[in-house]
Image (cartoon, rainbow, N blue to C red):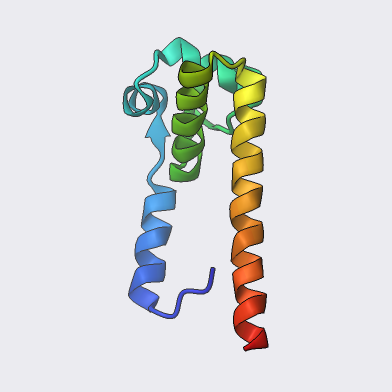
Length: 106
């Protein structure tokens, strides 16, 4: 993604730098802290460790919310939910690339 507005780039940087703690992540995903901790241990969610505590980015929040929804709606295992989220993100990226190439061809 190309950002032409320097102020917008700065605000995106602040959002990414503002990390969520485990409890906030669980609350925002409507799951238990144990649910989040288990997905981190299974390496399905990325965490940054500082002083023995794990913190999460906004991108990981998006991923966790979608994983939790897929697990609830389809009674999916954590690994399957992570795979579905990975594939959904890949499809989104491919659609963006296709739109870019189609626009360039015009």
